[in-house]
Structures are given as C-alpha cells and as structure tokens.
Image (cartoon, rainbow, N blue to C red):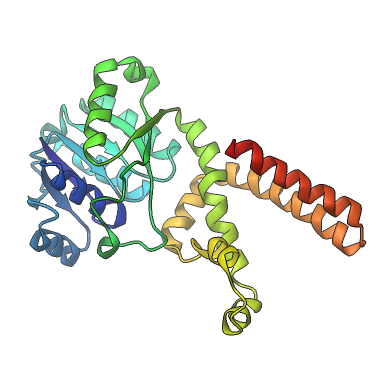
Length: 284
C-alpha cells in the first residue's frame, strides 16, 4: 500500500518511519523543504507527495488550521480529481473544527475523511525526534462521520485499524469529536498547561541548582517544554472545555490554599486523602 504523510514533524515523521518499517511505500511532504529533503535522504519517505496524490491513504500530521487549509486546497478545481476516492485521516490534537470542515469537504468532493488522534508523543517535537517505534502499543482515537454512516461501516473501520496496526498501534477508541475534545482537555491539554505554568516559579532554578529536585519535579515539568504556537491553537480551539477544566482546577487549588492559610490540618488531610482516593480509583 502507498501511504501519504503531510507534515514530517514528530508525529508525521514517526508515522512515515513506522509505515516504511512495516513494508509500505511512503510519500511525504512538509512545509519546510529542508526537512522534506532530509526525510527523503534518510529513507523515511520514498518520494515527495505532490499534487497528484498517488497514494491510497493520506495522514495529515499538521495543526487543525493547516489540515483544513490542505484539504480545501486539494479539493479545489485544480486538484479535485486527485483527491477523489482517497481516504484521509488527520492526526490533530482537537477534533471539532477539523472534523466539521473535513466531513463537509469529503461530502462535496467525494473523498472519505476520518478524524484521528494518535495518543503518543514526546516532550520534544520535530522530525529529528521522530522514531519508527513511537506508536508501539499506543492507542489511536478514531472520529468517523456519523451522518455519513462511516461509524457503522465495518469494512472502513477494519481497514483503518488494520493499517494503524502496521504503524504499531494496539488499541482503538471510536468516539465523536465532542467527546474527544472534552476528554482531551483534561487528559492532555490541562497537563501541558499546568506543567508550563508550574515551571515559572523562581524556585525552579534554585531547586535544580541545589540538587533538591527529584522524580516528582521531573514528572510535573516534563511537558512544560512545548511548541507554544501549536498548543495556543489547540487551547483556543478547545476553549470551552479548557475553561471548564481550568475553573474546576482553580476551585480545587483554592480549597487547598484556604486550608493551608487557615492552618486547617483536618481539611487539608481530607483534601489530600480525597485526591489519593481519586488516583486509586482510576488505576484499579
């Protein structure tokens, strides 16, 4: 099978390498031609993905705005024959905007669009950090167009899952775009935002310099190093869910702050115990 990958950063570069490793022909493209040429020389891709789109399936490993822009461009009068009958899967961190646009364009220009999100990554991005085993054992969220009947299209779902298994994915979750964005606001976006805010304390440098930083500090700050432009887009696209989670989190912090400020050991103990029980419940 011939697979196209648009965007050769951490996710796209890893997809290209993984599919190549499993024996597929891979065509790739990147806005940065230097990276595109390097991926070609390194053997991560077999050739450049051009406007002819000579492949069976295309993965869009770019931001939601860029994924939408790519589909609109390829669905233009110039390229609409090339995109016809193609299966296109995006890998964006939020799903509502890209799926709304993707489903509409797919219906109008006769291609199949399925939303997707590979639940794997690293604290550092870019092609240089990509690897063929990034997705080994990982989960992939699949967001089909319910109105078109794609969710109940068993052959399509089997085709997608079989293909993704070749890249190393082991588990799959089929959901709506609304469900995805609500969940991801908590499980991913809040973690990145909190980590990024936490590291701003003056004590970060002092603590590291004094050697008084252990595993807890490393865990809390692992994802503070992020692509600020990409994450700003994702946070803003998921603004409603992010605000809901942020308001809830700030409310919880205020309870802890008030207990400490008032020297209320009983309430603080209860709060800590409550958090411990929540952790136990989700890890059982």
